[in-house]
Amino acid sequence: MAKKSRVVLLEIAVDRASAVPLQRQVYLAIRHLIISGRLKPGAHLPSTRSLANELRLARTTVLDAFGQLIFEGYLQGRVGSGTRVSSQIPRDVPALAFVAEQYPVPSLRRKPRIARRTAPYALQRVAKPIRPLRPGLPDIETLPLDLWSRLTARHWRLAAYQFYAHADSLGYLPLRNAICDYVSGLRGVRCEPDQVIITAGAQQALYLCAKTLLDPGEWVWTEEPGYPRARMASSSAQLRGVPVPVDLHGMNPAAAS
Image 1 (cartoon, rainbow, N blue to C red):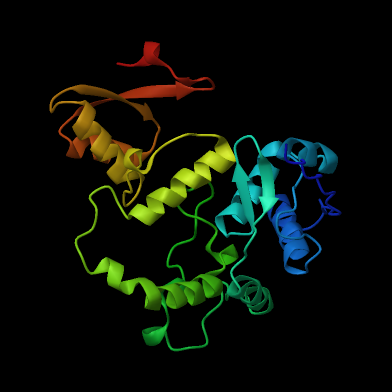
Image 2: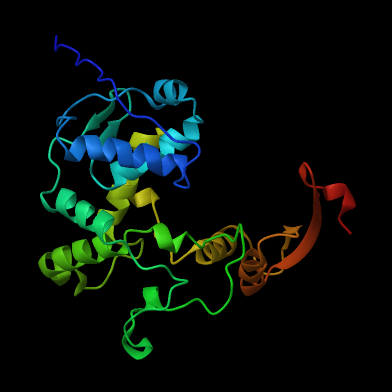
């Protein structure tokens, strides 16, 4: 019987007075331990529940940090065996991570130094103020765009030929495989690549569901107020929407007209 590896203790702390989100503090602290070599490949990390209790954080905060580390290849998670440091971290990841920290992406609220005509889309000023709690719009300023652009350029040169042929109708197969691995390791969801469909966004996904599950002319209840593009998707599928008011407990069918 194989000997079970010992769980390492993570010497990290969080600063609740810092402007850096707690989830990112946990992410950066663990990533630093891995890049500096203090966490060796194959090291078994504590569970998200025990780490959250130790740091006095919500478990979701630690889950999000672990999920980002798994997504970037620093950690590996498997159902029943916990989370470990990846056995093989790409050579360019630590170097590019260091570059991204030393040369952060310019703020969207700061005028780019390069001419507007040649400025990348991601660096252009936002014409309208960003509303809080706006779905589908991430915090662009915290995204490692420089790191992503370098990784994209590196891998595109090696894999561009794969995109010359007709694409799979379900979406890019390696991406669907990666999604299966991600939800399996982080959420314990068992699925196959054929059960995953890549869409261009939530609105397209809702439209496909409407066309698959309902017939034109059928009624569909929508929250009011609710996600406007969900109503647009049902309208595009020729469904008749019924706005249902919401209260503190969610949809209130009794108040529907």
